[in-house]
Image (cartoon, rainbow, N blue to C red; front, side, top):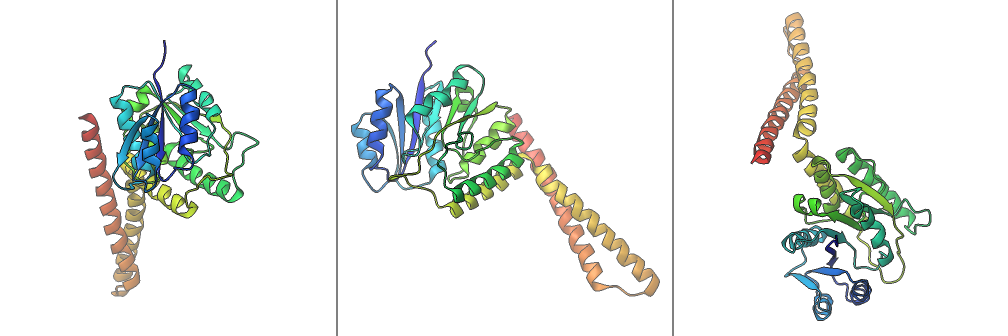
Length: 293
C-alpha cells in the first residue's frame, strides 16, 4: 500500500535556502507543506510560485506555531506520514528515508533524527552541551532515554498526527510533543542523521532556546503530572511546617514564649504545603474529567 507522505517546512525569512530545498524535495516526489511564519522577505512568495501548499501567518508567531499549523493542515489533508524538516539548510534530503523507514516498517509512531548517534556529527561544542543538558531535562519529564530531544527533524505516523495537538508557540514545542506522546504511550525511536552547520544556515539563540524549552517542560509536566509536580513538594512542605509548629508548641509549653522565627517557618510552610496539595488534587481531577470527555 502506498503511503501518503508530506514534508512540513516551518519557515521564517528563509528566502536564501527555501528554493533549493523545495527543488530537492520535489525531485524526490515528496508532497510539501510550507508554513510561512510571518516572514518579511520573499519566503512565502517563492514557495507559492513553486506550487507547494503554503500556510500564511500574518505575523511571526514562533516555531511552535508553525509546527502547530503544519499538524493541522496534515490532519485536514489526511496524510499518512508527516516529516518536519528545517528550512535553514541544516538537514539533508538524503536522511528523510532514514527517518520514515521505522514508521513504514511499523516499528515506531514517532521517529527522531538524532544529531548524536552519528560519530561524524558537526554540532558545535557549545550547542552540543546545551542540547544534551536540555535533553536530560526532557528525559526526566517524559521518562524516555533520548539522545536528542530537540531535533526538529522528525517523522510522525497517522496515529501521531491525529492524536498530537501542539500548543506551545515557541521552541518548547519539541519537548511538548514528546511529553504528550509519552503520555499517550506512542512509541518513539531515534535514528542517526548528519547535521550541517556551515554556509548560510541560521541558528536559534541558545540561551533563548534553552529558556523556552525549560519553561515549556515545567508547564507541560505540571499539566500532565499535577500530583507529582505540585503534590510531592506540597507534602514535603506540609511535613516541614507541621514539624516546626509542633516545635513551637513544645517551646511555648516549656518557656511560655513563642519563638517567632520557628513559628513563622511552621505557619508559612504549612500554608504553602496545603495550597500546593489542594492545587494538585484540583488539577488532577479537572484534567481527568477533561480527558474522559
